[in-house]
Image 1 (tube, helix red, strand yellow):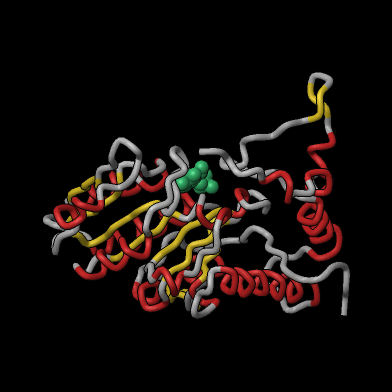
Image 2: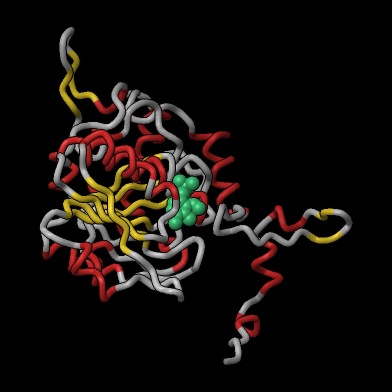
Length: 297
Ligand SMILES: Cc1ncc(COP(=O)(O)O)c(C=O)c1O
């Protein structure tokens, strides 16, 4: 089978021009960068927005009643609304800022997993998971007494859908799966897998670290309960990622990290939690920017 010639439709020179790092030379040659699946380079537009934020707009978010803090807060929440639209979440309250995919998955493991799993329960993952979607489940399985099982793949790297019924049973309480394998590039039938998981009452966690940068992802269409992805793999800065979670699940979950803005009220012996998504955003967050350049009202 011949490979389609994509280069005819790509204006490579203008795309390269968007990425200042591609202007450097390495050992006398123009830089070639092929590791975007691990972390993408940043286009000038993102670098400029970040610089502008630090040059003109920075203050702590949700912590001050003065111009800069309110403006930083507005931009931070505007970015959340934009991400909610991007993945078609039913509400921006379903978008939790995290550091990256890894932290988003750990958040679900340590909150939903810890609160809901017990001996006799099963966690299902696939054989092609990134460590970020495996090790948190190993730890939670060990701590709760739940059993970790693996849905196999065939010689071509495709999930053994014929075995799904043997692995997804009424004992399965959570199914954590990648939408797109970082090793094989295979794309899993997420919608079908989510439907099968829901049919046995399991909660679904989709690792979107590779799929969200590469293809349209609509959480309402997929029907998933959680979706995790990272900004740095899709031309954004490092240090910012997303956990999408269905609102009723987020509401029912205990907090992950504590302190700072995740608190509504503090007493000597206890504290009351903020509403979602802020309940899961402890401490000063990374900066998020989603609005137009350089305007100060
Ligand atoms: C499929 C998949 N999941 C999770 C991760 C972890 O992403 P991060 O390091 O941004 O948390 C990666 C990173 O390569 C990945 O490819």
